[in-house]
Amino acid sequence: MRMSSPSAPANKRSIAILFLTLFLDLVGFSIIFPLFPAMLEYYLPNGVGDSTWLGHIMAILVSWSEQSGASNPNFMATVLFGGLLGSLYSILQFIFAPIWGAYSDRYGRRPILLLTILGLALSYALWIFASSFYLLLLARVIGGIMGGNLSVATAAIADISSREKRSASLAIVGIAFGLGFIIGPAIGGLSTQVNLLEMAPSLEKFGVNPFSFAAAISFILCLVNLGWVYTKFDETLAIKNRAKKQASPYLRLFQSSQRDIRRTNFTYLFYMIAFSGMEFTLTFLAVERFQYSPLKNGLMFVYIGLLLVFVQGGLVRRLAKPVGEKRLALVGFLLGISAFLCIAIATNEPSFYLGLGLMAFSIGLCSPTLNALVSLFAKDDEQGASLGAFRSAGSLARAIGPLSAAWLYFSLGSTQAYAWGAIALVLPLLLLLYLPQPSRES
Image (cartoon, rainbow, N blue to C red):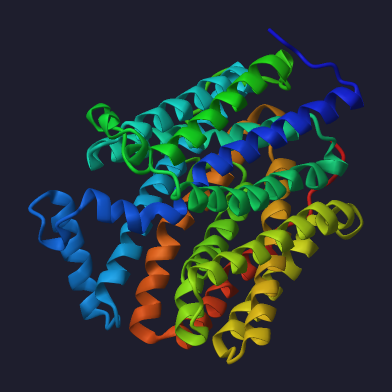
């Protein structure tokens, strides 16, 4: 078994490898985001009247959209279709992130990373040949199960980071997320310009579809990731620090033996329900108030992503030690409340972008510091399971938040929806106030 040396250069190399692993994972995962409307048109060519079960689901979504008062029910139903696929992926991550984390506590980070990356490659290979919606759904299910490996990579970073530098090291997870969610959708959008069936129509008999090129890019990135981890990544979890027996990893979000970890997980869960919901409805608001085009919506998320990279790569890495994780998270919550109130009343683009900037600073401060708090509260042989539960909380929130926020937005309007988003952050803020700042000594 490959084991890393405890030297600082070896640790820096491992962190660089893990950063690339997370980045490639997230690029491959987010490539699909811009494709949902076109995918629905491809897999449901006859519209909501189609007799397939997908057609029946879309008919229900259109009916719900009409009842909620949406001005364009068909468009709203399309968005909800993407939300449901995303929710399925998030629910599977909610279940499996603690499982992979717990297995990595027992058997080591490297074998679990290799296994899950191989599984992701299989999901993308299925997508390449997904001529039917059923195969696409199977590919997303496998991807959701294997995508829980983010908790393993996060635990590996915690393994080789001292307690006093834990927040600074874990901030690279946020940087990878920020860059991945900028570059992935951009690649996905550009990939729509290449239709393999137009180049070689005979490929259709093998299941090749208009989105196979995007799937192939994800597949290649996954293979690069697999080769990179196999050849370059050394095991970070020493045998002496491994869990002696396999604790039940199921629903660890609710079952952790440590009260402070449970409270941190619930703080993150409620924060991310509000944040992911408001993030999901941003494009609706931008179109409704400022008539944004798809290009302008894309640039809006690039702006948010760049600010995230700046906050997590610059501010958090420098301020976590002198200020403390809890104080930074509190500032992030207050900025989040201010952001949602600002967006709720924004009547021009400068005030809208001010609210977007406050949102980026909020998540940029809260996510890595709460992540670090869980790692600092957890025992050495429970890092994988504990950080898996933390990731699980975020995944559950991303399954609940977007659909709940869509209902609020189309039922009450954008102003009230974002005002309620601000109110929703009060509960996790109160939970955070009762958390202690963990010691930096082992």
